[in-house]
Length: 136
Image (cartoon, rainbow, N blue to C red; front, top):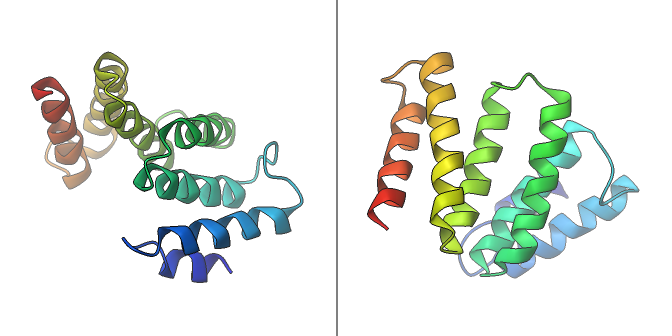
């Protein structure tokens, strides 16, 4: 079911993807407190679908849960956490919460510089996201 949800994660199919992701979460037995990495990954994807639908408050709430769960499961600078924090920063940016977005993008960029190196594509993406936030 997770793979079906992923296959619908394109513009025009977000509602279908949302329904599949929600069904996957129901099957886990817990939609709010499960700390497994796989459940957090499903929540992360669902948060991005909600973001694309313009449901930013719901997306933010879910993404905050994801970040908290991932921080309990992985080291603070693990690439998975950095991607989840970057997703949260993007949600802040979409809400026009520039200062919060800036803080998160800076955190991600600095950690990626240390962990991945200054010229890694993910680090450069973080720099671009931060530049876009400064522009806004």
